[in-house]
Amino acid sequence: MERRIATEAPVAVVTGVSSGIGNAALRELIRAGWKVFGSVRRPQDAERLSQELGAAYEPLVFDVTDEAAVQRAAEEVRKAMGSRKLSGLVNNAGIAVPGPLLELPVSELRRQIEVNLVAVLSVTQAFFPLLRTRADAGGRPARIVNVSSAAGRIALPFLGPYAVSKHGVQALSDSLRRECLRDGVDVVVIDPANVATSIWDKAEAVDLSAYNDSPYRGPMLRLRDSTVASGRRGSRPEVIGRRVVRVLQAARPRARQLVGKGSTRIWVATHLVSRRVVDRLIGRGLGLLPPRAAPPPSA
Image (tube, rainbow, N blue to C red; front, side, top):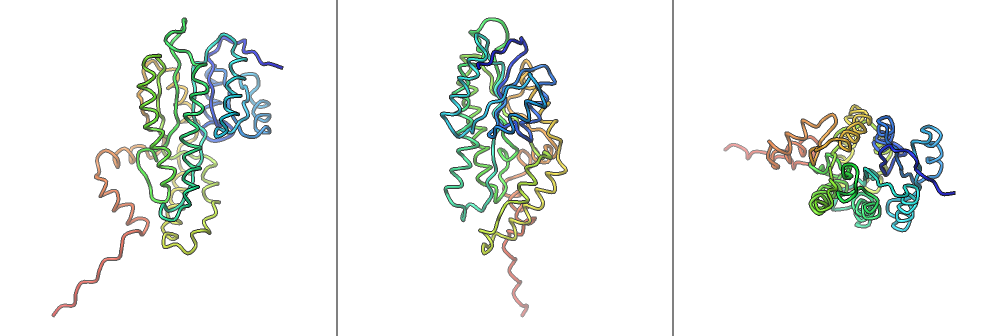
């Protein structure tokens, strides 16, 4: 049976709402009076969220890397919306692939980029025709929010694939925003810093046994332990969810927004400190610097 959206509330599509930042954005948007189509990969998550959130949530079940499924979901939303248009699209779904770049299987880098970057464009292309543009009468044009990461500003060792994908989201968003000037559709990037979500439990459980014989194993474990600890002390995901709502509802938000605990430190490291100094600080903290040569014996 076809769904029809009868409410006059603003409507958004959000990807990756089963947990974490996407789930927080979903709930905060509903709390602010929005209707939300939220994507999950598993039907059981769709059922759970439907029971919890009621009619304000419309489930979409698809994997963002499955282009055919993305297109089917867009058609489902088009039929449900009828003549109405979407007010927002939030590209949030993503994964994190760890590993030293010199030893990482290239297939893993491709997988990381496919999920975190290529899928952002795929989803945007599929849903863009449903977004309200300058040409649509009645109301402000829509806004696209791409959830990137502080890793899109500063690339840590052993998280290279993730940083590459998030730097890519930054560039994609800048180009897209400028291309969309003709339609009036705005594009904003949100860069969460430390956010306390279940991603840190997953990070702690990642199997790094493939690198047992790697010279990078010790530094990798030190990075994992430090990032997991700081992540668990991070901002609640609701902080990012509320920022998503503000970005979608603001008249003229900043195009790139760093948010969450640790934001100030990241801003300083990327704006006021030289890259070489940052290199040495990270290298010293993780044990990546070569040992200093002993001074020659005195005569």
